[in-house]
Image (tube, rainbow, N blue to C red; front, side, top):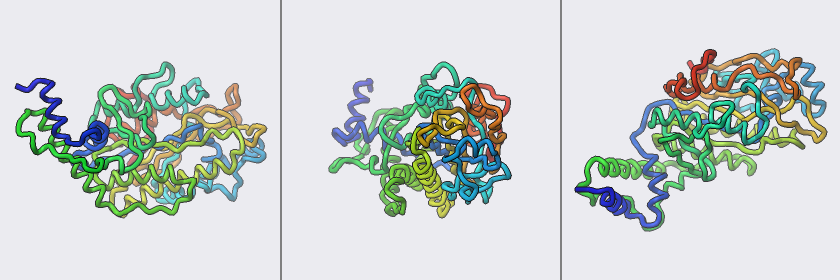
Length: 389
C-alpha cells in the first residue's frame, strides 16, 4: 500500500538529481510533453508606458505636430498605414508584416477611468479587469480552464500576474540552458517498478523531459547580429524560438521589453526601444518560418498606458492613457482596428479618449486563437473584434 510519504520517497529516488531536483523538476519535467500542433501566443509587455503616439504616428494631424515641437515624428520617419496614421520607421521590420497582411494595429486601446500608476495600471492589464485588483491574470485563468496552454514566463525569476492562475503554477526561464541538469546528475525513473497512476505520470514526465533536453541540445547554436542594447530582449525572443523549435508543449509565452518610462530625453531612447522590438519580433517569426512553424504563432504587444499628448519641459512625455496594441503573425487578420486618436477631444488631464476596451482585444485572442471561452476569463463582451483569419 502506497502512502503519501511512500510516494514522495519514491519520486525523490526516481529523480536521482540530488540538490538540483526541485528546480529542474519544476522547469524540465513540467515543460515537456508530446508536441501539440496548436496555436501559440507570445505576449510582449512594453514596460513603463509606451508612447503610442510616437509608435503609431498620427502624421496627418496638425494638433500632434504642434503639441510636440521637438518629439513629433517627422513625415520622412513615418511608414504610412493610411492617410492618417503610420508606423514609426524604427519599426521597419514590422512594416514588412503589414505589407503581407500579417500585422493588425488596434488603435486607442484602454479602459474606463484610466489609472496612470505603473503598478496599478499594469495590474489591471495583466489581471484583465479594471477596478479591484485580481489575484490571478487573464492568461493564468485561461490556463486554469485549459491546462494544456501551459503559460510560461521568459525573463528574470518571478512570473508576472498575467500568467498566474489558481491551479496552474507558471514557470520562469531566462535561457534554454536552465533546462540542463547539474554536472553528474541524471534523470531516470526506470528503477521504479510500481506505484500506480501517480508514479506512471511521473515516469511520463521524465521521459518527456529527456526528449526535450535532447531536442534543445540538437538545435544549432543561436546566432544574432543585434547590438549590445538589443541583447536582453533578443535573447528572450531567441529562447522562445528555441523552445518552439524543440517542440515544447507550451502554448503561451510571456516576456517583456523594459525602459518605456520616457519622462526625459525620449527621442533616441524610444527609437532604440522600438528598433529592439521590431528586430526581436521579426527574428522570432522569420526564424520559425524556415521550419514552417510561424503559422502557429501570433505575437501580442501591449503596454500599461500611453503617454500624454503634449511633450513636457524635459524633452519627454508623461503618463497618459490609451495606446495601440499590435498583433503580428501569419494567422493575424492585418489592418487597422478602431479609430485613430481624436486629438481634438481630450480628457481632463490632456489625454486622448480610449476607443477600444482592452478586454475586447483579450476576448478576440482567447476565442479565436487559443480556443478558450473568454466569458469565463474577462466576462461577457459585446464588441469583440475579429483579429484572426
